[in-house]
Length: 130
Image 1 (cartoon, rainbow, N blue to C red):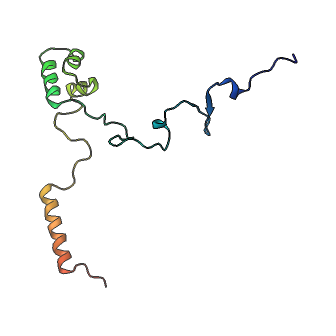
Image 2: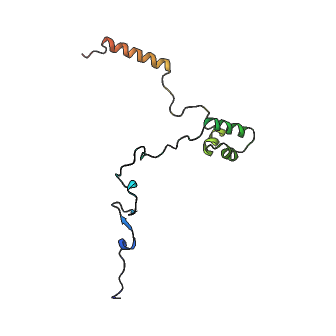
Image 3: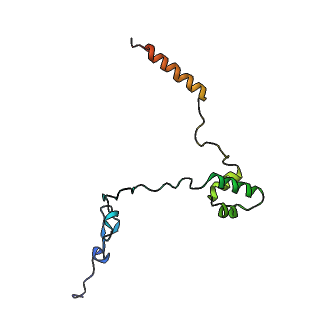
């Protein structure tokens, strides 16, 4: 029909604009959240730390309760510890007090001896270039 006008995709989206990468973003974003905006003093743009937000004492209490017959789900709720971490420790997949990562190649005393040897070599001028 001659009087029927269809909306273009940009008109149909209403108050949204298209970004360069094709995602639509709302135009009514507060100034503090816009890219390149400065934050007030004391605020950081980094995400908050979410790693290990539980107490080791709580985990020990939950482990003890599970070993005495309490279910893991009930212990998780009562002691406020992560379910997956508690289940890993109960099953023995992760031992209590163990450090994650690769095992050390040198012991602490071997490392100290090596450091002292290298410092001694450096003070007497070794190695000399030919």
